[in-house]
Image 1 (cartoon, one colour):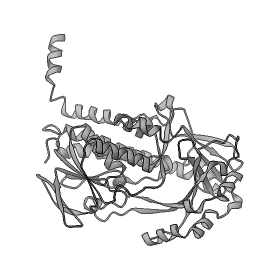
Image 2: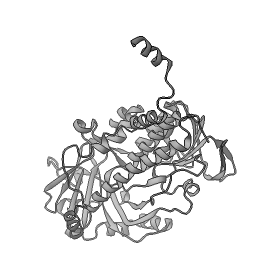
Image 3: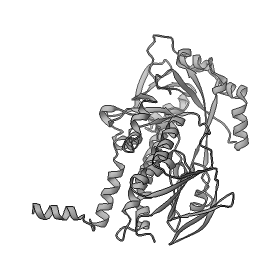
Image 4: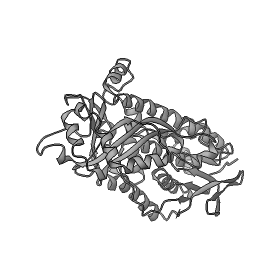
Length: 431
């Protein structure tokens, strides 16, 4: 049983969650080593939404300023009906209510900035190693192997290796991601090809039509490039099948343009100007709710998409991964005689699971608002599709001070057993 802060943490996966965890652990004085299969020169496509809860963490870690200047800052996504009249707005950020606007930024930009900070902090990263399996786990730590036969050890191993996590096979044997039945089809298109010059048109936007929602979201600094897309029901494929669909641009474009005549004018314009080379797909997979995010021996932990892949509708997939990393890094330095690892991990997982459950419920409401019209209207009547309410209604999500919450719990759990000498002297002087 670990009853002191770990001195060596191994992180499998140098993606967004893994890099953030490494930086947050360094901030807490805990050494770590990252292991990543992909070469850092590999380019990553696409962009993602970051809401105030994620941006607050990145700000604390010293990354927000440079990121905000490299992305598209905005506050709401407009909901339009089939006549393209704005009927609602969903806040992805708000400077007045939540201290930050939302940020849409290229994934590669975010990775580049995180990697640069990891390099600056001299955190070791080994690339080109594919994790194989856990060799042993006991009170002395965890030993693990890579596919090439090399081995390593640490006090704790954290799997931040994504939705198809190999580490999860050890923590939750037999659990596999489940396909939602929906695939997003998207393209990157110049805004000038969709909206005439001088016309003011709300973006990001979800245009709700007969067959669902057509989404357009600016994704560069000046908003001149727009991601445009919709989701379709499609049978599950294996990896080769998904690759084949992505490669067949003619078939993919035809699927994208299905029932084009039923879309409002702006969506039709976008669909008639698709740059085929930018077509992409995103099959929506989710990870079933896990009993735990750690091994029985508590030395192997998973987080981010490895523990709870969340569809992107609410812009919380990466954001919740950041929260996982930031809160785990906050709690590990607090381990001691009054706070053993098993107690800390049970609290951490339960606290994170409760929050993830609320995010998944919100995501489901937003997903329901993007369904075909007949299904959407029924769900709206039953209160199961998103409809905005009071200003600040998302404060529970965006204004959460997750590190402070962890430290407050630690304080109550340990009953302030360790009082700093300075505090003791100060109390005596004041007294």
